[in-house]
Amino acid sequence: MSARKQQLLNRHRKRKRLVVLVLLCVLLLSGLWLWWLPPVLALLLWVGHEAWFSDHLFYVAASDYEYDLQGCARYPLHSRDGLLTLPADCVLDASQTLLLRVQLRASLLGRLFDPAVVIEGGNADKQTFERGAKGVRYLNLSGQEAALAAGQLRLRGRHCRLADEMELLVIGHADYLAGTLMVIAPHADDAELAAFAAYAQAEQSWIVTLTAGEIENEYYRDTLALDTVQAARLKGELRSWDSVAVPRWAGVPSAQSVQLGYFCMQLSAMQANPQAVVASREADLVDTRPFRRFNECTLQSDTHGQPTWQALVADLCELIERARPDTVVLPHPQLDPHPDHICAHDALREALAACQWQPQTLLLYANHLHDNDRWPMGEAGDGVALPPLFEAQPGMCPWALQVSPERQRQKAMSLAMMHDLQPSAPLKRRVRRLLQQYLAGRRWPLFGKNEFFRKAVRRHELFWVETLVDKSKPQ
Image (cartoon, rainbow, N blue to C red; front, side):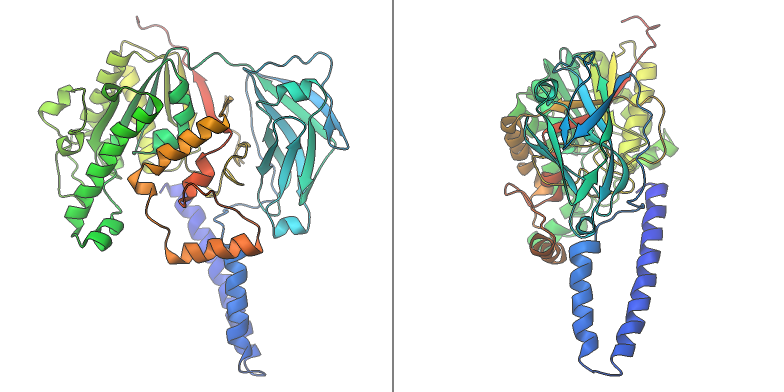
């Protein structure tokens, strides 16, 4: 967990403890009159907390999203009874990313139920925001260009109201899937969560997974009665298999899916001392080769298997020279706070600095956020609005890849094959979901119980584009 996210979590817990202390005093005082009242109130308060206030939302929902978006044409729009009309000089096509900057205000019910904007008249969609949301938000209208151009697109607020004055942002893009695409995945399933549709549609794809993901193996310890080392090695082997086998579902040749076998949550330690050998936390291993045994392609580091930062960067450089990707997909270091994701980005940057071959484009993704664990909010199959951002990052350029219903089903099945997403949720989480279903109107998809089935199987895959302008090195 990043220092910033840890700080936000600590502040959130401090506020929650203060509220619990106040409520405890109220319960104790109520017991002076009626002895049975405190336990009843305590139960009701717990139910209310689990149904409506258990989200990890580490910011004030009544805040504007702050974006400094680059390379976009801007058109003012006026909504009349929710119907949008384009200016005459606005010409749209299917290759563009379309965003609508809106002023949104949750109603009173929007503090208990998730406020959403329902998109009608084109490809039916719904994009959901925080309870109590108020301020600037960015709807994703990519894929709605035909209805928008025909004047048939209508917006309807559910548990929220939209201001009539809006702004359409139109961003043109090259065809990032026309050449060779390389996805950098810190763990097995990161490639599928962020970019299954992208690598399934690319002309040629490579999947490079950095770590075996062997830690947090309680499920295997408990169900199979294994000790920590045995469970870690089994989980690492299973996730290593997943990382090279599941991309076959999308047509990626097995020789182009590579597991590097470094150890989960140890990349930061490797980066801090690039030549030091950093062992697994739980698998009692100082050799990456046991987790590489399913690879069909060989690497120079297979001769020693040393888990060092220097070896990781060399592996990435060797694979880039071999694959010669036009586009590289990797985590966004500012949006995604997971330490291994940040290190994956840093390692790729170091590798590119040492490579002769240079890709034309980087596509950055976020499978986690600092301050909102539910994003993308809403249900599986919905569109993906821009994530919360309160400190504008310069040069941000979003690209929304449209994902058909058929491709969404394929993506859901690829996630279902991942061993780490298969175990059932803890009892507390299952009870919470049941309460949220009946009291807060939330729904989870039928094809998987893990939260990522809701968050990742959507009508868009969202990336942030960085065009590499340094062409001084020969290709």
